[in-house]
Length: 146
Image 1 (cartoon, rainbow, N blue to C red):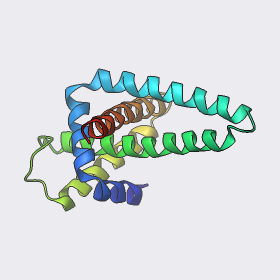
Image 2: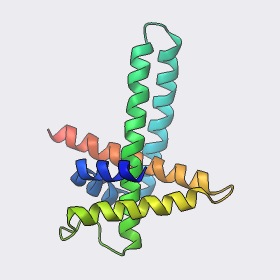
Image 3: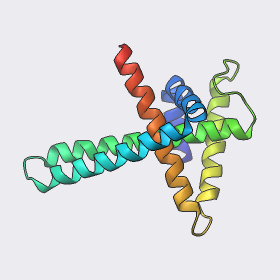
């Protein structure tokens, strides 16, 4: 998982920085958008899988959910890593290696929180849902301006 976090942070450093910034400034909006988006996407994928003709589209929606979940995980990890390191999100003085390091540090903290009995799983799930909302919001913003 840590290698995947590093690769995604390396591939999309600007997107992850902007998503982490959005998580910090609009946490409840990101969480709501992430939960609603996940529920709608899962329902749509399920309905598409029911019909034989819609199976390829259902698979595409399922893969989109998985990709957004990875982007959300990295956004939350990066934001959490910067928060732990008391770094200001959006600063330009953080080099690429530092961005990857802070994202990995945040992912390690999320992994530690995930093993807490009873409350760890839901906390991490909500954090990733907020990351999905922030990442999808940033992707939507970038697509609208393009």
